[in-house]
Amino acid sequence: MQDQSPTARYSARILNPDATEPVHLELTLNLHSYPHPDREPVKILVIGSKQSVSSIVVSLHQHGFAEIFEWTDFLSAPNADRPFQFQPHEVMKALVKYMPRE
Image (cartoon, rainbow, N blue to C red; front, side, top):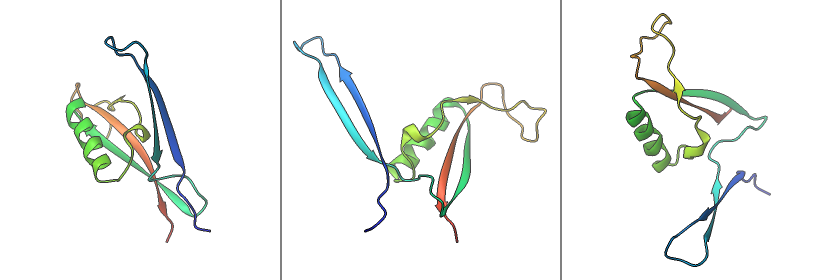
């Protein structure tokens, strides 16, 4: 039996003012990356303006790299006194991607 990727479920009720009943939506997504003993965690940061960071996350999702919900919420970028230089308005998102060990 082949090892199958785990899935994530997302469920939502959509309220439509024109309809008499709410619409129920349920999605099942295959996770592209998941912890497993034969996988190594790799941490990925995307740093920039909210618009640019979101654009990269969506682009990586469209290429099958990771689901959007696998990324963290927006985080404040480190202060300028740390090794990287950041602007006050910059934010970041992080993802842990599990890659096969060699």
